[in-house]
Every structure is written in structure tokens, then in C-alpha cells.
Length: 122
Image 1 (tube, rainbow, N blue to C red):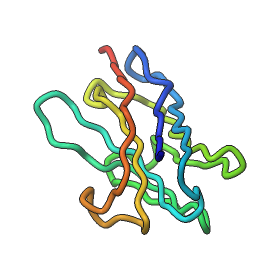
Image 2 (spheres, rainbow, N blue to C red):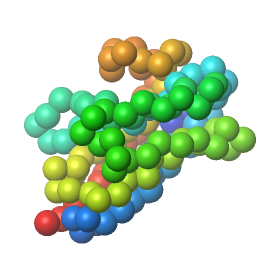
Image 3 (spheres, rainbow, N blue to C red):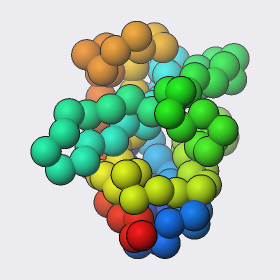
């Protein structure tokens, strides 16, 4: 059974930081790219970042480049998202997801986890 469990969300003031974790199981971790996707109320899901677990290549959406950092601990089958300089517009449910290849769009994600809520106050 494939599982991706996002955690680490919470309430933070603008300018603050959070570190999200995505613990995975039920699939070969380094056969998949793992990404972070968020969805704010009333908006479509937005891909933020992805890591190729085989070679460590990192991908970011321009809007979070320099603020968010994705990383992985392959021994723990876990991916992290360090979020700094948070803004109120970052408020959303954050999901981790897995794709057989580095995804070009959200349709290419094969597995999705339950999201974790991030709320940034102004």
C-alpha cells in the first residue's frame, strides 16, 4: 500500500519558517520523483518543487525559488520542504506526491498523500 504522509504544517507569522516532512512507504523510494504541491482555498493545485531521488536533482517553481528548499533522506524514505520567508499568500494545504518520472505537470503524479495545513498570518 503506497503511503505519503505530509506533516509539519501549522500557523506561522509572515517572515517565519516551517519545515514540512513527507514520510513515504509502499514503493521503491528512489524509483520515484517526490514533489510538493499546494492548494489554497478556491484555487487550483500548484506544483512547487520536486526532487529526483535517484540523482538529487532539484526543481522549483520560480515563485518559491530562493525561499523554499527541497531535500531528501533516502535512508528514511523521507522528503522535506524547508520554507523560509513565508508570506500570507503561502497559506494553503501542502501535499507531497510521487511520480515515476520527474513530472512536467500535476497529471504525471501517480500517488498523493494527505496534505498538511500551512497558515501564514500577516
